[in-house]
Length: 468
Image (tube, rainbow, N blue to C red; front, top):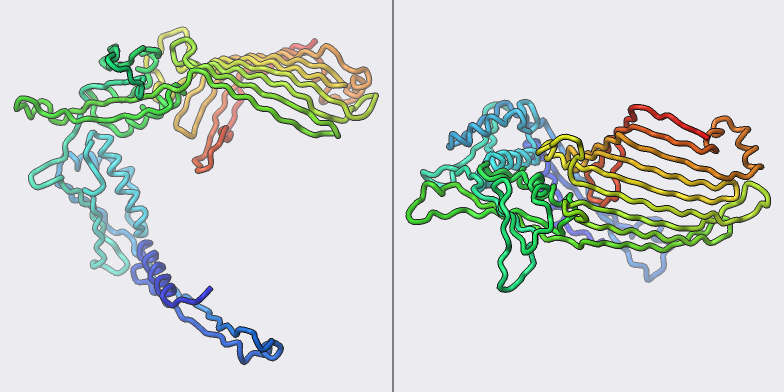
């Protein structure tokens, strides 16, 4: 690499800027370069006449941090008294604390927090550009007095609080039919529009946290989008807001009013996946095939039916005579019905709607044929699933029944199991009812993941066994 002194100067400037952004206002950064000439080195005596003699440069950076600056006072200068009340009420959640070191990245996060706080309080037009933080270091050495200033939109103006006047939900956005108008249904003051209503408005209503008559809230907007996405019924969805303009000179009654329009484009009703593959174990090839079918909105209530079939062979070394490589047979299937609400004997209304409640009814069948034994497993589960956030999921299983049927076993393998007391019971047929509760945590990551990482698992209730 060719040495460039301008890059060294730029590096010194960047390091100095970084240190000041971290509160080291009196830091110093210098750089010195040392040139090493190899022409007079001992190795030069053994080089050829055509050797290129490079000059090497060693760059040394010296950084003196000195004492960092800390906050000694935090105050506010907010012209709008209504905005000031919201900000002061949310002050306990502030990211800035007295005696903390001055850090520009935290100041940026605090500006974003204040913007979100005010947007959740109805300030639809509020932006970070109205927020300025001034640092004063003139009072005492290594101290900062930080003032948060929130300006008004203009001279004599105040920030407007907006209320949602009407909510429109278009459930077939992107569909065009010339000369045909969408049909409109009204449920709980929300207008549902579609050429053909395919989804239960009762289910959709429970997923909407943007409601008429309530203040605009960015949090409710994002939660509505996430809950509609979790239904797995729509390819995309978004929430748009339109300000109501004054009509006929009436500039007071319509001031601060919004119309929320939810656009959702339905995805395919059927989704099929087929996988082929193979393994090579114990010198034998083992082909397998997996088939999965997903049927959406099967009963009109945004339900999801999942059907899976699998079949395969796998090579292994036999544990009983005749010894050698053999193929084992594995067949299986499963059926899952996911309902986007809790199925309970009483009316849940909007209970836990913010936590994306679901009921999952599952059944599975597995058949295994090996030289040592033949076994059939049947399992049925009934799960309640809800989410505290996008990364925390809870699963309550009040019913989980597993039936294990082993009709045949090899006598030689049976004798081997008799000597193993720990696994002796596993050779029998059995019925295993269980009651479990699980909490799953999936950490935020930029890498896509197909399943959550278990953060905690608790098993409650009983695990009896009926063997034959």
